[in-house]
Image 1 (cartoon, helix red, strand yellow):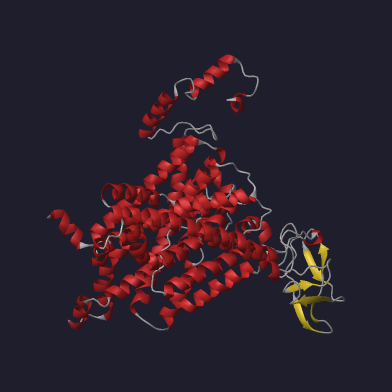
Image 2 (cartoon, rainbow over the protein chains, first blue to last red):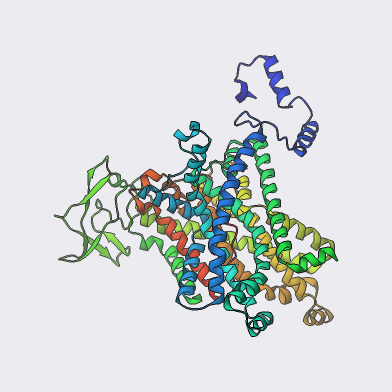
Length: 288
Length: 320
């Protein structure tokens, strides 16, 4: 109260501010009122920014979602094909990929983002930090998009590299397990080509365990994105949460936590839907 | 692969233990004329055997240093320290100096004690916690199991780093290093136990149905004895794997917290506080040796990954 109005505030001003923050009601009523509003996704007003929490969070969550989707796409495109290779064959190529993924696995997002930032500032290939440059803010919609697209690769890559390595390892493991199953041998005996065998039979069967991982990956992306957002100054949910925690802005923290929960729930929903699409057994169970 | 991982881990632990002897300089000593000095190059030969040329600051603005070729400083080795400069005023900076003119190599070695010690203690604490709760849940079954399992699932689902941040942020920000250490061990244990508890619960619950447990019970063993003597040893393999997985994540958690300014104060050398020093990109561009702690963390994680992969478990480490 004192920090809000200063030491020499007039009594009526104090009363008005007390009413604004609901401080004139009993603690139970305060909590009840907050819970009621929170259930309608109205998390009140941030002390730190003096703005409604909802708008702040919506913007930050959008930025985090862009980052997470980009990272997930990169990780999938890199990790899964490489995992199929290492899981199904031996030799120098598979060995090299395995070694590379072991190295990537050992560089967590904190280190990848620092290293990439270092490389970027050394070479000047990519802008270091932030989501937009100063000039691009007023430059119109298409220029803004282009600018964001230029800033995106660095944090997305930092987030994606360890995840891609994880995907590669898991896919390789699932692949080498399914490739020795009787049905794959049977397909080979029927005269399926190597490509058909790998993609149509072994890979489809190994997808089951990969889908389960995607649900977990969302949680990892959320955690990882905090570090990456902090290091590369990406204005996302992790950064907002950190600022809110530092400033003890409880409404904003609660809002961020709720948004994180939404992300997690969305992740497991997507993973379940993928499982439904991939595994005929799950579908059969639903109709029967 | 497993042997390589194990050897690397043992080497890292030995380095941490022997840090006071291995480090050429005290970790807090500030060499005022050596801010951002590059690594010292050691030469072999000449009348001294092992020597280096002292650094001279050429331009303070550009932070440019040059070797003073005319003078050689002898390196004492296998003395009171493994390597040390024979001249007090000419420091031996194997990995250069940081923004305060402190020896990065020495800080790295001393920092490994704080970082590793914290991670080891936190791992032990979460193992103890997790094993106790998991075994009770698995052994008791029924409502107790249900309640404990749901609770640990709940903690497990939360993104760990946010929980750590939130817990740390509600505590007083500025604390003496000893209290920070204890606090972080506590917080990490609170976040780490559910993973252990879930695995232990599964093993205990399935082992409980085996004949030898029934036999033990028939011979009159009480629940405590059954748990301690017969059931917990079955979880040993699981626990050791889990410990090796938790260890690097705690090292990383310390680094992250210190990096964002919620961990140790900057005067304490840990890998996290050293990374915090390196967080200013424009400074690091010309002084890449400031990223040395990142390499150290990488080595530890790599050693653990080699070890775990070699023993046939996939390192699924989705939480940092």
